[in-house]
Structures are given as C-alpha cells and as structure tokens.
Length: 246
Image 1 (tube, rainbow, N blue to C red):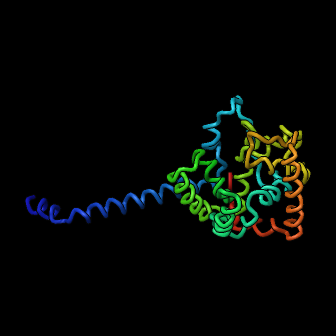
Image 2 (image 1 turned 180 degrees about the horizontal axis):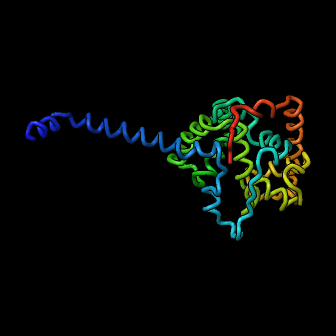
Image 3 (image 1 turned 135 degrees about the horizontal axis):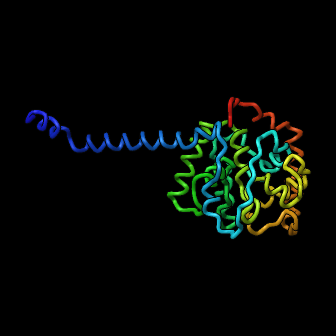
C-alpha cells in the first residue's frame, strides 16, 4: 500500500494535467461527433434557434421536406444567394474570408462570409452573436459536420431549418405561407425572393418585396440560370449515399 501511494506521488503533476487535458479533448471530439453524426440518418425535430425564437409567433411554422420534395429552384436559389462555392470548400470558405477582409477598406467593415455549412451549425446548435466562443464552436462543429455528412444532406438540412420570416422556419412552411405552394412548386422568381430574405428574414418580405429585394432576386435568378447550365446540383447529388435515413 505504501509503495503504491509512493508510486502515484512520483508521477509529475504536469503529466497528470496533460493526461486530464488529453481525456477532455478526446471527450470533446467524441461528443461533437455524437452530436452531429445522427443527422446523417435522422431529421432534427427542432433547432437551437427555434428554441430561442422571440418572434411572438405561436406556434412556430415549421415543416420538414425531404430532398426530393424540395425541388431544384430553392436549392439553386439558396446556393446562388448564400454560398456559390458550397460544393468546393470544406465548410470554411477561406477564399471568401480573404476577399471580405480585402474589401474592408472600401466598405469600412468586414462583410459576412459564412458558408451554408456554418449557418446550418449556427441554427442547429448555437445562438445569435459574434463573440469569440460562439465563432470558435461554430468553426469546429462546421468541420465535424462536413466530415460526417455529405453536401446534399447539409443543404437539405439548411433549407429545412433556415428562418424565412418571423417564426417561419424551413422552405416548406415559407413557400406555403408566402406563395401558397409546396416547395417543389416554387418558380425561380419565388425561390429567389425566398433566398433573398435569408440575410434579414425579420425585415424582408418575399410576398411584398422592397426595391432592394427585387434587385437582389433579379441577380439571384441570373446566378440560378448559370448554375443550372453548369448542372451544379449533379455535383452534390447522390454523393456518399445515406441508406436507411429516417
């Protein structure tokens, strides 16, 4: 017994702290994977942003639509509006960040360069704001998301949880609320108007667009046409199949 206590005491304190730190890091990594990986097969019932919603709408409008029920227009519109390099980056678009920083001198501020993957993580797990802790968690979970899920699945989740108006989440609820059609029935113009409100869903109205939203939707439609000519959706469709998703 005395020898055992002496042996334990002989382990340097820094080694004990290093072991504890290693275990904590391992637990954090495993916990992150366990948080994200089930989304490969299961649709999230709610999100952190829905739980924090302060729009006053009761109940919230939310409807889940599988990828085949979304149609191509809204998928192309969201990519055209939010993240045209979505198929090429690994969750963090370094090129867009560098460009945004380079434009700071002209704009006077750094333009947002969040990817669809980052926005998906933020909506699912985090909270509004720009503090260092939130951005760090967002960056880490974005990498985990990209490792665990194929691009098509990430885009499917994003379209089903993004806020399109006060208390209106997901394109299924938004398309019916604003235009009276299911998502696969959206025209390119309607899809562009919906995608155009994503930066400011509490201020912009797709069914009563401001001049700014009209001009933005015109640009989005042009980008959609280009992406369609380039068969953009085939780049992510069917990649890394997800058998048995519920």
